Image 1 (cartoon, rainbow over the protein chains, first blue to last red):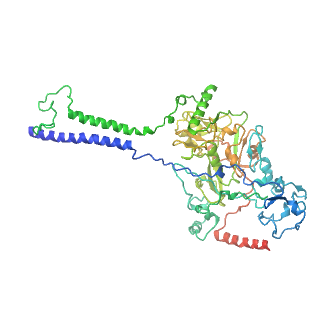
Image 2: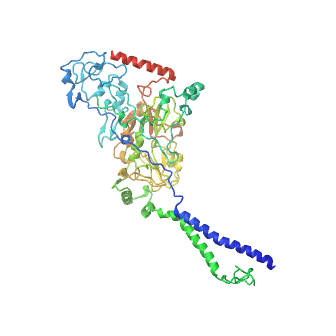
Length: 262
Length: 363
């Protein structure tokens, strides 16, 4: 009886000894690991993208002077200063010899004197040849853009800033040329401000292929549209080129404001 | 242990086994003390190690006594509200190092706010998104934005195919229109219905607000909202130094803490003083319109009465106070209404036509 008992107790004592060493070692190890911050918590939250200052700037796209003036070499002239001396020819199907910086892309409205007064260059003109002052550009635009003028009068078109409650403060309704260049009237395209960069999704690239999300895909001839889109090298339509990542072609943030020419 | 005894009894404890007499209490031996003592010390240090992240606990992170035992907003008396505002002001000053103006503007009588957004004019520039973040002191990292601008395919109103990570060089893109979505301030708000603690409710002027001190962060409202208008602070919000808007109100843009919901309040701290929301002020195209729908002369009233108005997800029956509307013609005047022709044709026509006209002009 002593023999087997002795060996059993010897085994047990060896196990005890191992346990006596192992348990503190493991616990000390755990304590050391936990206290030493080996797996230090690093937040998965990325740095916020830089938001350019213009993204929160409430200024209008254009700040036209609304005066019949031109600045040349630091001096400000009224339009009549020159045009009284040098009358320009009455009709302008020719290209400009002066004011070459003005690019007129106003659809079929390609005549200077549709808007500018024929004899008084310090004024704009209405449908009956009467003068419209430079600070009332909406009256000129209303000659053709009736529905938009109506909407602007009622506040459905154009910006409204200040107070919604005019009893408590002033309200500003900018006129047409604060947003539209009268010579190139479409609202100027601008670079978009940074998109969402959320915790879980990260900065996701837009869908690479337009047809992945195209709601009209069932109405299209399938192979045709896919074949076109598969060869983006030669096809440089707007729809496809806009999908390219625009890192290199990022325009300057100020590029959307086209100066203060009237 | 110094005198090496015979092998069999070697490591055995003296009180025990050979005689088999059970003792009442085990005597403490040196070996047993060392063994158990070491294990105990190691265990305690392991527990201490497990608690060691508490070293980084800032006492400032814990809610104060007043905050813990603050009543629900609607049950607070005027004095208690003033005390809460003072506490918020002190907290903001301590954390953000600016002296804020904390207020609690009441809803105006005879006013119901309505928002209208012209989808024909929106160009998707996302300025509203960032003006909103700036105005309402949302967290920059992790990023919380109340407005999500969806890029939609022209000819479709299917938001399942919308894209909000678009980043072309210039917007608008010709094949798309843009539909910003934010809180619609519904008349039948499902988010209010699901809140188990009534931490969110609808004010008399139609704005659905949250008491950030009462919210338990269960996110039921986020799940209930059909417009994805509610955002959750998954971690402690961060606002860069100096970018905090010091004009803050209890129910709208006071800095939030980790674990609470937040949402657009139509800039409650601005509109209840008669001002426009920040997103309206910043919109470069004037697509965003805001006003009192009970005033028959207001802009939004004109829009609702005269324009073609579209209610987003009208079928869910939430009766939003946010309307999308259109202009008469197409999307934008300068863009073709007809669908874009195949690439080859359009390009040859464009490249062929333009130089010819320029040449004619030069003559």
